[in-house]
Image 1 (spheres, rainbow, N blue to C red):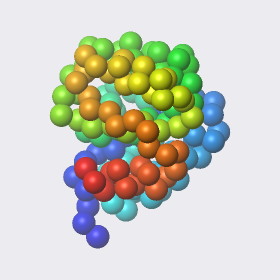
Image 2: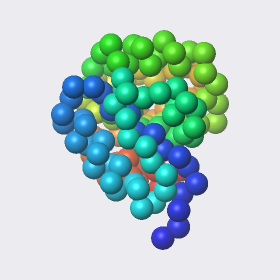
Image 3: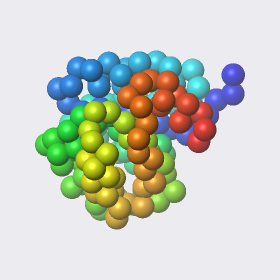
Length: 127
């Protein structure tokens, strides 16, 4: 099986067991395909964010404190040319607001993936 050169960082919302389970399933599915790191939003370190070149954000509440802090720090980063997908339980308006928080970073975010591990795997394969 061909390895994907993209380094994927899967970040899931703290204290949401359903999203943590989804993220762990996605990590397990992607691992044979390439490099993947799994972190909770509050457990993610900026060097990990910079080391990756693709991201999967698993979100329930786009205004949760863990995301607010990530968005605050991300404003000073250059993520141009990198891609992300956004999935979870947040509304489409919430997803758009979350994505808009990354505008200054030039990160390209695909919204609207179904909340399932296969969606992340298929998205990763297409990179």
